[in-house]
Length: 444
Image 1: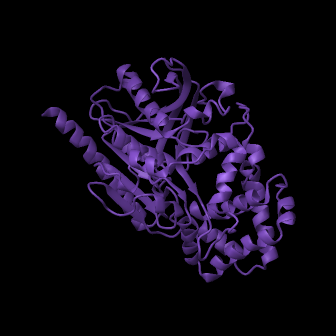
Image 2: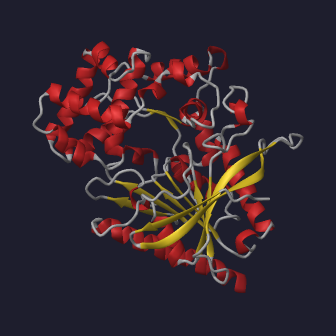
Image 3: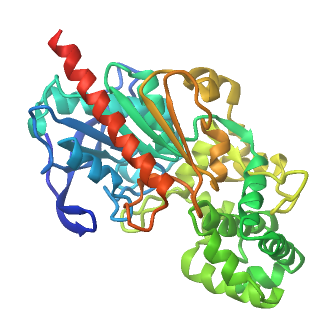
């Protein structure tokens, strides 16, 4: 059973107009591991159908992650170009416990229900949903059609893990900035941000360090100016550093460094605060805020759920490296352990088992054919991704100015650097090879 809710008509550069349709899968299982548990929830998905040709076509399975899924964003339309080229249907699935895909509905964010929020359950959602589409022959999909998983960041890891765990369901995966290595203590993140800032010169790297130090030295004043008085000192320092780093992570290094250049420290702080008041939400870093377990469909949020995943499965806690740190050394691993306790309760003793997680999902040792790993050179997340060629997997390390997180998924433009353009050409060729190989095997 499915339901059409919204139809979006989008016209964009390089891609013809396309219709994106919001739908609902009404019978997703809440627990894939307890056969006596028959509870289900409504999971949201989208389709883009006009490029699909059942004769020789494919299905591109776009995986959404730790956010309210918008379907296909107008800023990230490379997959739509792939759909045009390969006569593909696009199917986008929202992750459980995010957006409007809420098990237990208004009770979703209660701690006793968050135990159903995990990578294995989410991967099984993908498989159960895919089988639903195929078995019901929706949108003209047949058993014979090849599926390719696509995702960026955590969903990029999901795409890789889906190919790894369910190789019979997808013929390949595009794992963009895929964070496949579970890691609790991640100081190399800041080291990379510092190295990325150096591409704009020593002045930029020094400015970023000075900004963070200034914030730490003037905590009460800066917290007040950012309306963040409810955050503890460490929570505020966590937020403040993230607010700077995210601008570099997502390809904004040149703009940030240029905007800070030649300014006094007070002018730099004024500039940062003006941007932060518009772009950021410091409250989402506060343990007091993250304790709130009320689900409001008119005010969708993701921070409580994502911090739960970080506290229970993936970690990726960014701590201060020994040298060239951009964050306070007060943000050590003990702070993050206490942070998890403050949010979800002392008694639960939540903390990821990275050895167990990497043993199950593969981590850096993940090895299976037909996965494309891509990473931007300036992206700090590349250090928990696969950046060197291994086995039969294809690896692209894109070294362009401001090459950040999930860089190749963005809508292609004429201004893109040659290396990025070439990577997209080769990715499309690889998709074509996977699809042709799939149909060739069926003819044998």
